[in-house]
Length: 429
Image 1 (tube, rainbow, N blue to C red):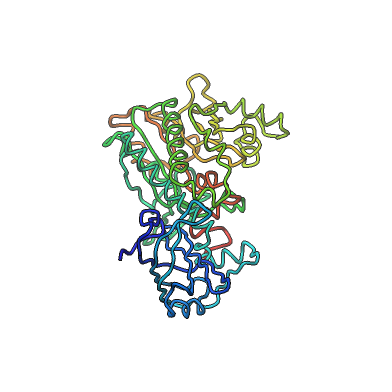
Image 2: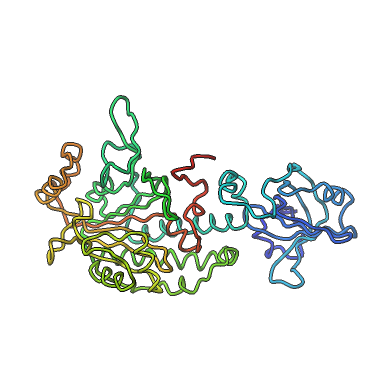
């Protein structure tokens, strides 16, 4: 008798199998018990009928509680009314009878569910979100590896910031100040001179005191950098990556998307070309919709929401004012008050999911930008050195994994997109 996963049931129709799992739900009708099983790979129904099951199985059913762990054997059969398969149980062993489960059928508030996150991860919607998240991660590796990128690991402990120290967590590093990384960008830029195209993928930290539905203090970021790539090609890489990710989820996670009640119409439209607006064009559209954004202002979260409600595909907003962007972004040669950058905004009000730019590749110009912004030169000297030894035009971008998960899954808050969210008011569990 084979021990299988629930996701394999259809391949064993008519055969007797063993299943290990947990009781996600159960009910009885006369002499028949209907058990909803979860085993990590999926969900399925197991039917325990007194007419066919061993007496020990019936006795075990009487003892069942939510989240009890069990071992079952039975014959796989097609459901009489649905396009799915179930288990006709012949034997059932109770591995551990769970205590009364604190998360019942009644409505629970977000604080209660966050306090019990270690248990809430077992819920069907949380299960579905994490499966989609896994597909997004794998699709990212697949696309970037296929496009010539290799993974380079950047440090989490750094002596400097990427875009200013106001949003960093500072720690004592054996008597000198250090920071938890907010991005691996500067470090992987160094690796392009060895490998051409590189990316990193790991946790980053922002001490931003924000309580919006889009912000976490710890999240996962993918940064990519590429030598000999300029602004337009940089956008093409991002466009193709997001398209590949979305269609990987549509191909592999239909069951999970249905479980999340996600309307996939807009996801199915995610094909190149994406929409393109300059920052100036975006400001004009936003003012038409009632925003008070200034000509040289960065887009806020509310502005991004207003803008993305107008479109049915992702939108690149390009060429922001240099004054509101980081020192390393290359100026637009046709308008030096602006930079060759873009933010990619997801539709349906979800806002920014990628930020990227062409990087300044000239030593003297980069040094001048740093001096203009009164940045300390010595901690960045290694970064400046990259422009002294074989500098080339290059570009890069970074995406926030949780924001992409939130959009693709159609979630209301980014905290649902990560197993154990870290917020300004939450460090546990």
